[in-house]
Figure (cartoon, rainbow, N blue to C red):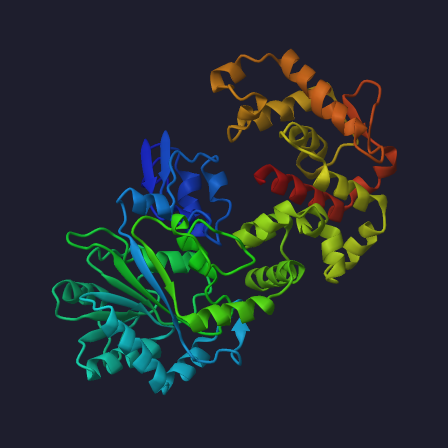
Amino acid sequence: NEAYFPEDYFEYIIIDEFHHAVTAQYKKIVDYFKPKFLLGLTATPERLDGKNIYELCDYNVPYEITLKEAINKGILVPFHYYGIYDETDYSHLHLVKGRYNEEELTNIYQANTKRFELIYKYYQKYASKQALAFCCSKQHAEMMAKDFNKRGIASVAVYSEGSGEYAMERKEAINKLKQGQIKVIFSVDMFNEGVDIPSVDMVMFLRPTQSPIIFLQQLGRGLRTYQGKKYLNVLDFIGNYVKAGKFISLLTESTTESKRTYVYQEKDLPDDCILDFDMQLIDLFKQMDMKTLTMKEKINNEYFRIKELLEQRPTRVELFTYMEDSIYQYCMSHAKENPFRHYLDFLNDLNELSDDEKAIYKTIGRDFINLIETTDMQKVYKMPILYAFYNQGNIKSAITDEDVLSTWKEFFSKNKNWKDFASDMTYDKYLKITDKQHLAKAKTMPIKYLKASGKGFFVEKENFALALNENLNDIIKNKVFVDNMRDILEYRTIE
């Protein structure tokens, strides 16, 4: 706010947990201040709510490090991961927006004495002085703390607005854990990020993990180095829940979507790490892999998950932003199943087109939309030409040299797009390119290729740099067509 700080008040701004920068509150800060240097720090750049955080920082990534590198360099401690078979039956539970209902989970854990025994047995087996355990609900955290205290292991439950018998405020619980007054903190979503207890020597996953981000964040609570700490024990209690064992691949260098990682080679793991599974789990994973959905079904399910999440039908940009990374990577390497290359066809197959879109779908407008979705772009040169036609939503039927030059220079001055000119291009070199050279490049490359690109949509016209086929004259005034063109250009710019 101008009343407190002028926009250029800070020369240097550092924002931690930068994956939140796509949310409204953070975005206000990022959009308002104009520092000379902005540094974003995050352990989870592929955060589900923030694919386009890269765009916010102009795709500048000065430094990144993988989990394997961080452990090998001694920045984090090694992990000893134990996948423990849990007989609890999840098959009758309901998934809502990709997550299990907390109440249903709590109910199946409630009187599950076999599960209490299992957790206690393995906790004792891999002796711990300071453990952090992740639960599904307040009631679950309370019942676990009660069970452990009954067995003589001092434990507390930490959750928001804690008022139960074993509840303790987070700060106090951390202090007591560090001082050895308690042995285990049973937590509900209070330690995913922003809290560090370097001395923690064990992490226990006591609920189904449905997100790779949360899996890594919760694991990360125990990976901090600490004097005398040689490794972190990780106890993961795995049953027949959806995505069981899916995120274990994050511990190795394997990131494939299709299979769970229970077969790996020593070289895949960071130094001094262990990955160990109960034999029953390997059988369980094989059974579940046989039941897995086809990729087409997964893409369709992902679309409906995102639609429900946003409470509206997603645009291409929104589908890209919220789609799970592994599914997006699959789309990129399988053109036929890639909805971003034929979004109207994809929506039509799912019966998701509006009446107005159905009308456009039956015209050559659909073919033109598909052309700009699929036109080959090894480099971004076609983008500014297409933006010149788009003309902020008032689509032009023909563009002049002046139009081309104006959008061309505007486009290449943004987000370091000028780097696409040449591998050794610098900003100083870019600034020395003359208007005549810019125009010549636009005409000999993208304009020439657009004219040659199928169906004769881009044509020559006297006194103009390039024109649209006159058959499109009425269609370019249609709102649905305009919205689709904008969405494609935004998506392909980010992509």
